[in-house]
Picture 1 (cartoon, rainbow, N blue to C red):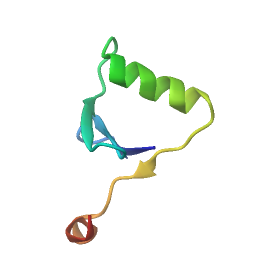
Picture 2 (tube, rainbow, N blue to C red; picture 1 turned 180 degrees about the horizontal axis):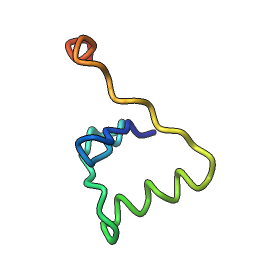
Picture 3 (tube, rainbow, N blue to C red; picture 1 turned 90 degrees about the vertical axis):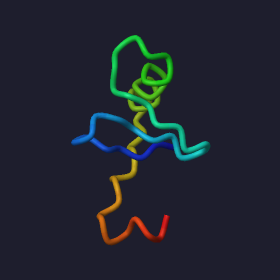
Picture 4 (tube, one colour; picture 1 turned 180 degrees about the vertical axis):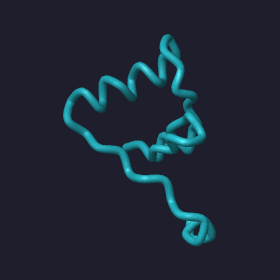
Length: 54
């Protein structure tokens, strides 16, 4: 599963906390796009007030 940070231009892979830049050709970003194409929906980025809970 992934968490999406659109304004910052990256996604976070929840399983290991990896920060993945939204750059075509990046193998992790390509895997994310395949995951999306399979009908999956990423979690929204947490609001500033929720960051302390992560």
